[in-house]
Image (tube, rainbow, N blue to C red):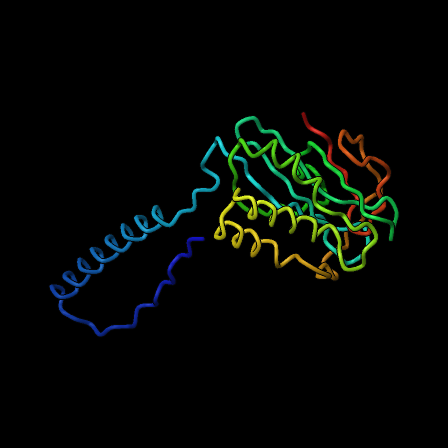
Length: 224
């Protein structure tokens, strides 16, 4: 990510003749112009390619405020920029402490009131990987009732799957991993104060049913 260089405060100077001041002013102006052009040029070189390819698929970690408990709920989301299609992968619990169940939905996660905005951007993949990923994700083992495993680990494993199959490279994987890391684990704490109804809307994906997960209760509307 491009970081703007910090501006150094100019030191107070003694009064000089007008000629010297004018010359210094011109020199400063020239330096600032060259510096600005250098920064713009550097920014163009260093700018990541993500977010610009309309023929690519954007990948996100959707993070939700939990209805109760101290875990953020995670879901892996992909968005086809050209067709505006969404696909969401997650594991849910139908009752508190119950087994995790795979759940897929064609929904924009940002339409949920409990989803943190903006979505946590991870990277991009080729469009021809869309159908492959939908078929590959269900092969990830879901241990069911496991105190040491939850929805966050599921998303991490999907991200690892993309790396193992050459869909993303090490640099892209590391970027996404670092983006998710601050929200990993029991770090929700007292940031909430939100009171969301424990309900669900009509689900067109796998693993329907009333969801009472400690991690997440979704309230998004499905989109075509």
